[in-house]
Amino acid sequence: MGTTTPSISDLEVRCKIIDAQQTISLRHSVLWPDKDISHVLLPDDQTGTHLGAFAFGLSRSEEPIAVISLFLEPLPIDNAAERYDYSGQKAVRFRKFACASPFQGRGIGTKLLEYTMSVAERTLGASVIWCDARVSSQKWYEKRGLSPFGSAFYKSNVKYIRMKCELLDDNASGAITDEHSAFRLVPPLSGE
Image (cartoon, rainbow, N blue to C red; front, side):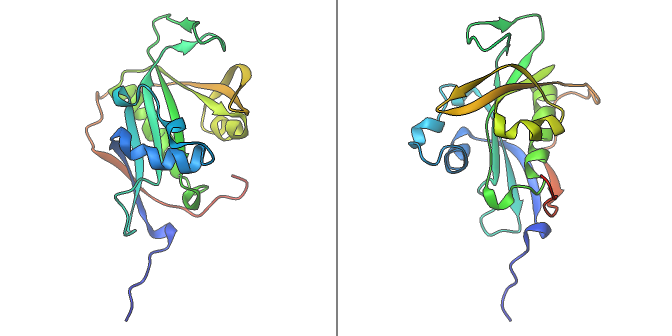
């Protein structure tokens, strides 16, 4: 009688706040595997808020299967790094959003992004969230409520576009009190 390995769709996934160090390996392997690991380190990592999704039911549930990092950073007016909108909107930028390839297309990134928006609004007090998205991911972000702004630009020969989303205060109950958000994985959706 051997043990049965759970299928991916039977796993429970939880999102929670993590340490910056817990994001590095996944950032590197998913986003920039051909670059030195230093390429995925950010100068503000120690002051950011980092989130991870964890699969329970796997023997390695202590390793995140998806990660994202948040930073208080004003909304840029255009692609010029020195031009920001200081109109009173508190903005949070998310960076280094990565999901391990065996778990892509199963709703994990969507759930982590939803959790990210909740943390940005309720814990960090943001009214808008934004990112520099790879153009290849633009449609994915648009399906989740983000809209492009500014012109496309390049980083390390990869084309990017800025995306943003106004955060709605659906439940202004204050800071998130739960340690994490849990959900079950679903099979991949066709066309995603």
